[in-house]
Amino acid sequence: MQNEEMIQQWTEMNQAAMEAIKELGEINTKAMTRLTQRQMDMVNLYMEEGTKQIETLSQAKGAPDIVAAQSRWFTELNGKVMENARQTVEDLVDVKADFTSWAEKGMEKAKVGLSKPESNA
Image (cartoon, rainbow, N blue to C red; front, side, top):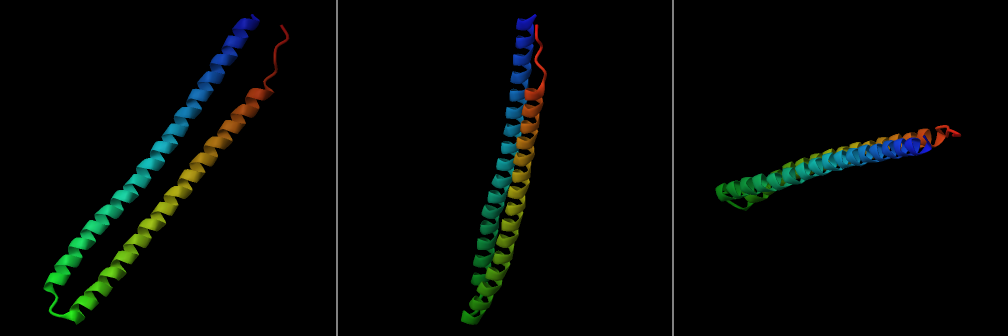
């Protein structure tokens, strides 16, 4: 009977470990997906803004037009970059919360596992 209990405990422990690893993988996948999207957003932003800048400069009639266009372009680009940075920080805060929750859940499971009464067979 003692061997069966040990096998059962071992099986439960392995299942819990596999669940924890799966959850960690999901957190990592979610984080990498979100961060990759932010990077792609930045690449697209620079491509679009570069195209806009070339179009604007090609239509400029003189130095004052170029300076005004550059100033507008820089202001717009700066706002968009700052928004992307803000969203990235939010994503990282969410990931931190996910990791914290995952770790707390694991600690709770470990406490419960340690507090199970052992049978005296």
